[in-house]
Structures are given as C-alpha cells and as structure tokens.
Length: 220
Image (cartoon, rainbow, N blue to C red; front, side):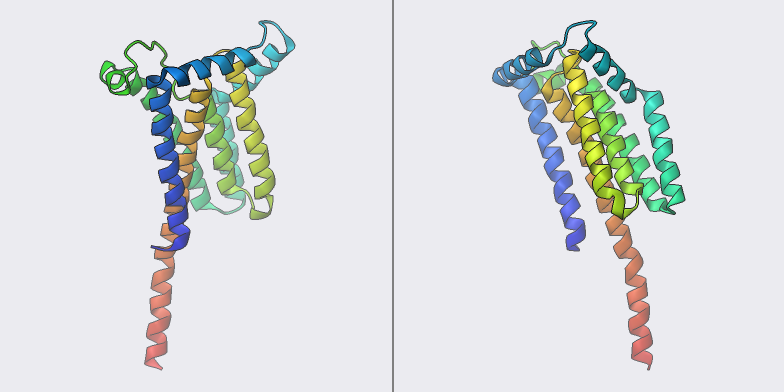
C-alpha cells in the first residue's frame, strides 16, 4: 500500500483507539471522572454574564440548521473550485461523524454498555459532545474543498472554532472535557478515513494510465 494512504489510515486508527480509551476512562475511571468535574468547575460562567451570552451564541453553530448551512457553504466552495471528490469527502465527514456521535450516545446509555465500561452508577449520557462533533466535522469539511494555498488559514480558523465550541459547552455546564475530546476524535477519525479513501481512489485512477503507457512503450 502506498505511503500516502498508510498515513491517514494510521491517523484513523489512532483516533479510533483514542476514542475508545477516552470513553473507557470517562465512564469507568473514578479518577478521570473527578478530573472531568474539577475542570468543568473551573470553566463555569455565571448565568446571565457576558461570557454566558458569548458561549450561548457560539453553541448556535452546533445545531442542525447551522450545520446544514455551513455544509452547503462548503459544498458551494467545492463546486466553485471544481472539486467533486472534495465535496464527497466533506459530506462523508459531516454525515458520518454526526451520525456516529448520536449512535454512541444511544449505545453508551444501554445497560450492557455501561456494564462493560464499569459505569453502572454513572447517570451521564453526554459522550461524545454533539456540538463539538458538529464544529470539528465542518472544520474538516472545509479543509477538503478550499484551495491548497488557503489551507493553513482555514485550518487555523477551524481550530479556533472547535476550541471555542469546546469552551462554550464546558462553560455552560453542558459537557465534560472527555465529551469534548470524544467529539473531536470522532470527527478526526472520519476525516482521516475520508482522506485515505480519496488517496486510495487516486492510486486506482493512476494505475490504468501507467499500464497504458507501458503497453505503448512495449509496442514501439
């Protein structure tokens, strides 16, 4: 397998393994749960404060209507740049990541899953964060459709957007840090999977051309 495919596959494996590890710690480790709680307590903002208003405004971008609008914008940019494969990758990341997060929320609330994770006494069902998953997935989606020269700037803006969303859900006491980490890992896993798929498809397209050239050379 080509090296340029192995790298995103390694990223996918690392993110998936990290997601499993974070889930096990968040639900099965009392030390991790205490750390989660302590970090949230430090970041909480007062109700009605300026920070509370800012955090609430940021979370608006994690809801479905805003997510759909930003996805449509990413698709429009990809269309303008004539990047159909980039559009497909962006849609895959946004849809795959957000469906995965909702499925995990349902799955981890099941008694059998709680028994496996050692979390029978935990009442929290917020892992991973849906808002952070939405923010991270759309940030990755834009990376697939923008021109290469703009990629560093888009990556920086996307990282700030995800960090802001993570802070907002913690400041409003909606989630724990482990939930935020889980949302980022879910979106990143899908991002690496989409990148690996694009690169693998590119290799498949190049092979017939190379074979045709070799055949032409052998006939001369």
